[in-house]
Image (cartoon, rainbow, N blue to C red):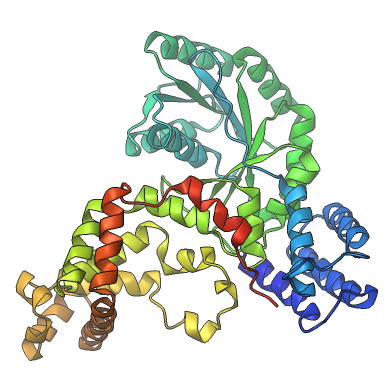
Length: 466
């Protein structure tokens, strides 16, 4: 979602490269480029105006910090002011109330509200270890109730049944009684999608909020609608007591304007981003980390957290031991690719590494993407255990059998083998004393680095421009 904006912002800083000091003229050039980058990303005009006013005022007479270049000093200023616009820190859900904590979710029709409910329920269950109950109070779209039931079943979340001939307040009252009786930690309420101009529907949801008395009322916004998303959220915030925003479809081709506009316009924090269709595709929103990615400084903390959460550490250690002994085979390569895909693939990992936004497209194109990953996995799955272990056996008729079994071509089989041989060489280089030391550290420190310690990376992180 943010690639284009990130590239444009980073291009704007190049206006200061090679400059020995900050002057009014070169700052003006850089600010103009930042302005165009933000407007092209569909950031609301009011937000752009207010943000650049702050940057312009503080940039004049800005002293270049010790050990920094003028470009780095300006980036630091932009980072600070952009973080102020979208929120300084992550604002977690407020669950400090008598159980069940009630969370109500509202949004426009088609914003992805019902699927977001399921993702939020899964997040609360898997990452916060809460006992969650979901209920649909959407009596206008019969399919909504069935959709939530199916999603809840998929995520193994408890579902409270409801009927379209019941009143929303009655549905919620019954669900609340059931949640209390069965000692649920959280009750998640899905509401009917509505248009903000529909006064009757707005009145209904206000009544429902008063009856349910939720500790959190979250508004789901489709990020693909750009600055319109922020203005829609503002209308809802003026009619409903919102506590936060969830941005959906952030993995699409949106230009990023919603994320930079909605907090400033509504005054309500963005609490989560939905970045895919899978049930676990929900991320806590960390303003500083997003700004860091936009400015080319990566997002190492989120990457470490994701590895901590999604990587199978027992399998990772097993693979590492095989690398040390020089026994890395096609089964290990398959496992490595699967682990990478769990974290969104190579593209998602690159996005979080410092300075990687600037690598040439022709270099990126040579890296394994999700389509290639699926082809490689299908090819390896069509091999026998012996072929995976002894790749030199794969010749002639074996290649034909593997190609037919995986629905690919002999050329694809050859590419997989070539990719494996490159990977095997790299793994051999990684083997030995360095890998043994890393393995020993993983064993004594619980498999992964301490996230709290990783916070030090932020202050020490070098800027990608000079």
